[in-house]
Length: 325
Image 1 (cartoon, rainbow, N blue to C red):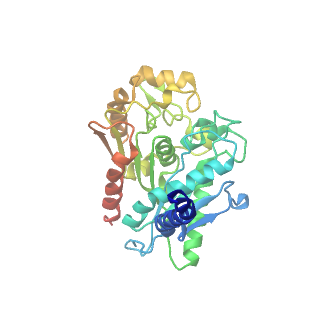
Image 2 (image 1 turned 120 degrees about the horizontal axis):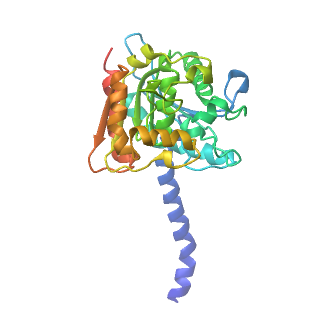
Image 3 (image 1 turned 180 degrees about the vertical axis):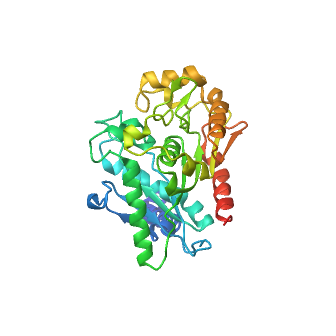
């Protein structure tokens, strides 16, 4: 009798549980899903991948009446020739960073750049050297593709009556920090401020050489002009407020892998600055100081490769930047 009653009620119970779960998901995802715009790739405008644009209900305005755009490069953490993998990761990245955009009152742009298995050595999500040399239009010059996305997003907001500063806030952690760090070196005039968390073991040095040793991209900026046709703008780079941070227990080192670094270049970085991220940290800090960069370096005690444990430091830095005319 009890078994029959259970079998009769079980479908209703399951339906109720599914309804409660569905409501929970809607409450959790709804505020983001309703306000995020999926923008399709527009090769004629300069970007071959799609992006997501989230606009909070309240936007901070600067002294000129301009809103600000926060750019979070995507980092799927894996290679895949299925663009859906990178699209879904970019959407979730935007969902996770929504809180930051709401807190700061800034629009949020997350690109959905691919990281392909067929061309796994081109570490797109880290803006490695191959991105500047490949002829594949989907993967080439993602720095310029991102600028095209930024300008497209600004045009969309302008049509809604919201002018947006051409300079963006740019943040990243791990591979996306490498992207943010290198983009800032390539285009300092387009960055209002950057936060760089655990940048793969070595942030790009804003100098061409150390002693007699040249530092080609991405170890340094020695050959940027040859690679991109545009010389390094040291004065503009020095004006960008930057916060570079890492846990002192973080041993995540991109130089140990062949997708983001050529072996001779990573070996040279090891020889010159040490063979661990922690050993290299003070060397990088001195090179930024030598270049006159407006950069603050911080090692956080007792933290490993943990973005969530360190995210509030990045947000606080941006809050201070936005409060400064």
